[in-house]
Length: 107
Ligand SMILES: [Zn+2]
Ligand SMILES: [Zn+2]
Image (cartoon, rainbow, N blue to C red; front, side, top):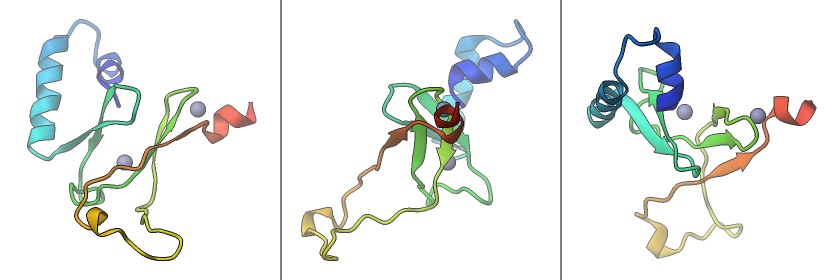
């Protein structure tokens, strides 16, 4: 969920936008939420629990049409011939998967 979606889910007028922003930021810093930018410059937050931990940094699919986000199973990146350039061994890279979700393509 993004900040706007979280604000919309709370009773109107009961929470201050800046306070929620700060709380989300604190929870992300503490490892309770994962904060991610999926390429559209909007921070989204995902609850980390027994099933989703900080170490399990799975890839997300962002629907460019409706903005829906789906968690993908852990992916592995390797060259077709199986080789891995040495420079990538300890690199921190993110895979960005964008497109149109099933409900946007079926309509
Ligand atoms: Zn969609
Ligand atoms: Zn996820």
